Length: 308
Image (cartoon, helix red, strand yellow):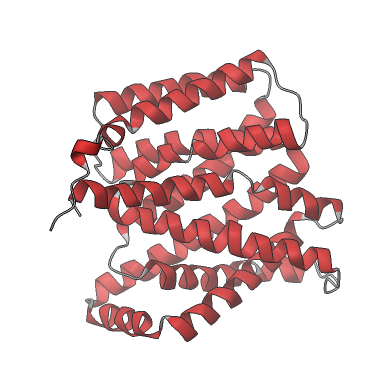
């Protein structure tokens, strides 16, 4: 395949992760109806995901584990420490993001949860530009401007929700920027390492909020769905995408998430919508197209050449 087609698969992976997360409010609201709070959902999400991913790694990816161990052993001590501390920081950020997002969706509003991932791409793109020196051309800056306009439109009259949304967004944007700096480690195994560290961060929640072990079948069905389809799969896809695309590009692709979340809130949960919200989400969709216009142009049949 050409390099264009190879980069396209990373773009698809990034978009797929955002599409999946757009439907995340459905199992979260199911658990809310079962009277489970954000702390309990987070605890069992992390523990279940950790068990599932390491079972898969041990039984099906032993060669990759050995390769990663050899790679880490071959690093100098300063580089090894840097990978360790960046990994711990990334785990802290993503765990805090999970908890705050669950809380926002179930205790603030679906609109605030969607708005968080409107702010996140803007912060990720700008963070990639300032901290990772990722290139942003004039077209990409225009798309960020369009996104900023949509954010201001949707923020009108919902200031408290905006504060929560920005907090959630900052956490995930920081996580994505750090992930871009860690390369050469198998992304599936690295996700397992992140969940391992995340399990330590939730210990204070277990101590502070002791509770009975859940026995409802419906609870475990929703937790398994969250662990597999809304944690392991989309996180792996987003980490895989960062092999071939910049964090700023992945950040903009996240705009697909709130567009879908908005549709779920309107069509599935029957939340109200006004003309300003429709206008803001429309401008978001335009921002996604403008930011990725260079990739879209490469999808022409003439550019999709297969090497012999």
